Image 1 (tube, protein in one colour):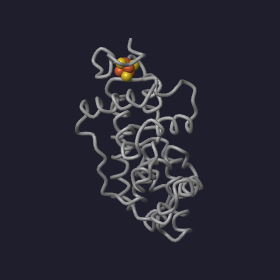
Image 2 (cartoon, rainbow, N blue to C red):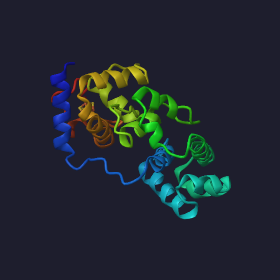
Image 3 (cartoon, protein in one colour):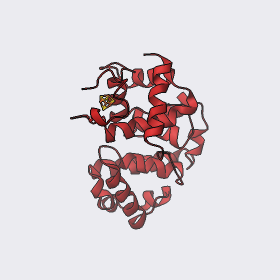
Length: 215
Ligand code: SF4
């Protein structure tokens, strides 16, 4: 698949989902908390847990460090996997505190160094690190979640069985860095709306005349 096809896909998705834009007023540490809460759950539950954590504990590094872990568990229960997530949120706060208390210092580093640093935090893998780097650090990277992986493969932009890094690098080679945010957000929108894991809604999909996997 060539770059023209990749951009045909992106242009159509921009038209199909004109209101999809990343809006953030949160600082990078809050973004990290939200990203941890979003692991293996739906956004609505992650945001509810995030708001409850803010109400019950607070979202500053010092709030998290001062809080009893059971209180964090209680606050974020709705997001599921609450014990592991509470531990990761505490670990993240400890780690950021140990390097001076600011995530901005990490985000100022060159991309690969910043990635490696973020992945020193327990529970932060490729995807979580890349979400932070793209959304809060403005770094040129395409995080690959389950929707991005499935949609890319069905559209023939990547191949089934490719690992995280190969999918990421392949997509990054097909698009210009200034479009990485849109690729990430719009592929997720497509995956949620039409290109679902089971029973994709191909007959309604805006890409059905160019997609090689249309059923
Ligand atoms: S045509 Fe079907 S398989 Fe292809 S992107 Fe659309 S929903 Fe997915």
